[in-house]
Amino acid sequence: MTLPTLYEIRQDYLEALEALSDPELDLPAEAIADTLEGLEGQLQEKAVNVAAFLRHLETTAEAIKEAEARMAQRRRAIENRSAGLREYLKQSMLATGISRIESPWFELAIRKNPPAVEIDDEARLPDEFKREVTTIKVDRAALKAALKDHDIPGAHLATGTRLAIR
Image (cartoon, rainbow, N blue to C red):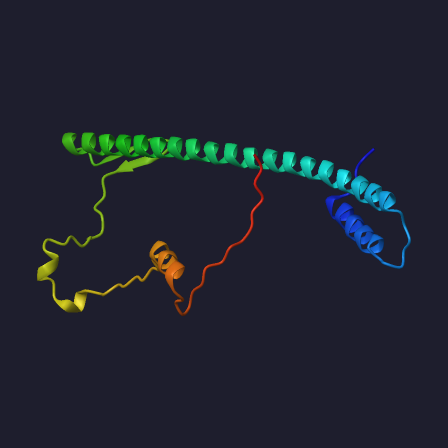
């Protein structure tokens, strides 16, 4: 037997609570308690099942996150090895004076890079080549501490709720 959805159980519970609290309905207190208890039991059972599935999803997400980190680490190692081999090959060709090697699969050639700017002393550069970059960030920790003492325009403290599963 499958349970109804949590939404359906919640709706049934709220409807029963509303109907049973009708003062014109003459039901014994025991009948009201039994009805709500039955619905509450279903709700609790379904909630436990949903929480178990939630934990499964969180565990899966964490495993994926760890796999991504391992893959990123492996990718960086492969990129570093590739760069090292590229530099090793380049230095070997430069040292021997060989600037071009052809094979059936590819061609190796020492080429000049386009000019790149190297700054020797930034302080001596004319202002026309400088830009001011300003980034403003809110210090949330300091703002929170200040809001505990007094009101500050543009911000307020808000307390929400969360579901704790232990």
